[in-house]
Length: 230
Image (cartoon, rainbow, N blue to C red; front, side, top):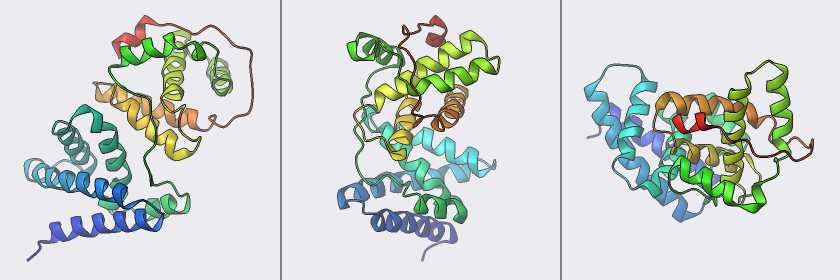
C-alpha cells in the first residue's frame, strides 16, 4: 500500500508527465524525464529522512546529490527537469498554470553547445571568429547597468557570462525554453552555489532585454581575469 508521501510523489510525477504530453512532448522525451525524476524522487525520500530544513533546501540538496550519480553530459537535462518539476513537487498550482499558459515546459531536445569547464567554454568562444562583435542584444542591458552606476568590473563579468550564454544557445530557436535551457547549462559550469544563484539573478534580469531590437556598434570583447575565480 502506498504511503502518503509516495502517493504525493506519484501524483506530482504523473501531473508533470501528463502536462508534457498535453503540450506535445515526444514519447522518448517523456520517458527520459520520467527516468530522471524517478531517481530524483528516490533521493528526495532519502533527504527527507536526514534533515528537517525547508523544502527548498531539501530539494536543492537532492538535485546536487543526484548530479553526483550521473555523468556530466546528463547534468543539464537533470537540472532542467528538476527546475520544471519543482512546482509540481510543492503543489504550486499558480506557477503550474503559468507554465502551461506560456507553453514554457521543454517538450523536445534543445541543441546547446556546452562542454568542458567555464574556462574551456570561454576560450572556445574567444577562438570563434563569429563571436568577436558585441551581440546587439547586450547593448541595452550594458547601458542600463552603466546608468545605474554598476562598477566596471561587475559589468565586465556579467557581459562576459551573458555573451557565453548567447553562445551556448546560438544554434537553438530563439524561444524562452531555449533561453532557460541555456541558463540550466551554464549552471553546470559554476562549482559554488552562491555563484549559481548570482548568475540566475543576472540571467533573469537580462531575459527582459533578450529580444530587444536595439543595435549598437561592435565593441572589442572584454576580458576579465576576475571571471576565473567564479
